[in-house]
Image (cartoon, chains in turn cyan, brown):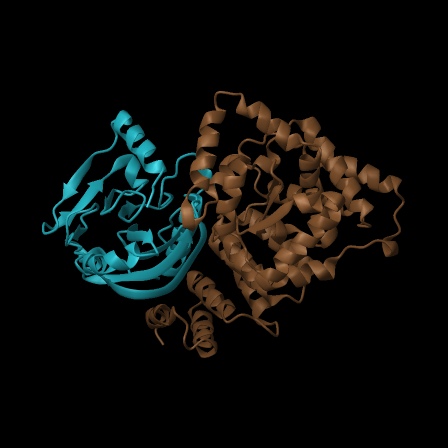
Length: 202
Length: 345
């Protein structure tokens, strides 16, 4: 698998001094942002800044931009989910605290489209636990500009009028299925300390 | 040549639309327009929701589904394809390719094109897109392409006034979203829509066309594109340019008032834009869709969502129940049941 853009991205990130890549301990419960705790299950390479593309952090096993778990946490009304270079903010669909779960799924699809992915399709929105409160899961597929078919799984919840989302994406061939069992465990390991402030869907 | 490598990648890309009937249709139209040059041009339809088409120095033509979604008939498509063919036949693309190759910045573009093209079995559109960045024509070349496209289309018997219609529609969409930047190459150096409309209208008027004597090819175009339109509309909404989508859908509904599918997507666009009065407009559009004979079950779900947002719980409950009755195996059944639970049955 060749990720041609990644070396350039890494160089830019290093030159910019706005990213740090470090090992993530698989067994240590980790705060991934906005007080959301997860257990990584296995060792990951973790980063933030440019490589996270709007997420508070991103983890990968085989390479950034290839298979990733991105943590979007504490997104407030009026903010886009993803920050996308060269796309004007006014051209991005933004989060609203009144969004229904269906609309969060649609917002995610639109955001991936703005990231440059094609044929973004979502499916199977369903309520699942997000820590001790109600969250939602959905599945997605999309195509990279290199013609690579990707699959994804998203888990999200709204609390304190903010959106928190964990988004796993990987090539449909081999990578997605290989790491999905680990990601499932990450999803079920979510712990939200202040569950009492969780907002249910309207 | 990078273009040939990029084309190999495009042939294998999952973004390429593989519907045989649509490909045969576009290929035939391109051939009819290209005449003796038919064998040197190869057309590909790609599932990209932006309005665009392009022709490359090696004869590869790329047509976006976002263009096909906005075209109303074969005559309009002939004008656009004729425009792109003229760039190719007048060697605009080749000249641009040669001049760009001699610039410092070209190295990056050619590297990207070659790299994208070498993506292997997965195929690549990145190389094609990188190649597209090469072709920034002068306005005079664009005017020449407009004139050439007009001659090719009218020469095949298409209504000369249809060239004006395309740019009028694009002007409407742009007016609906005036703050949006227009990043597409297709617009970058083109004459303004108003200039194009004026020029083409003048030419059409000079021809004194009789309405009954011209061919629009609306039925053949619709037959080729209608089976794929649902997927294209889904991707259109994923662009997140809802004001443009609403303008497009209103025009499509005007042309095809019995199409409940279009009313459903209009409701979706209003609901997702979520500006002032949009929820009411969404409710009305969903209701109009449901009133049709072949309304998609998702129209009931959309009505439920819009009703829920406006606090009309009884309407939301009825709509969600109707959705589950029509689509008992819906993959989002658990979420709809969750909505029903929060409403209180």
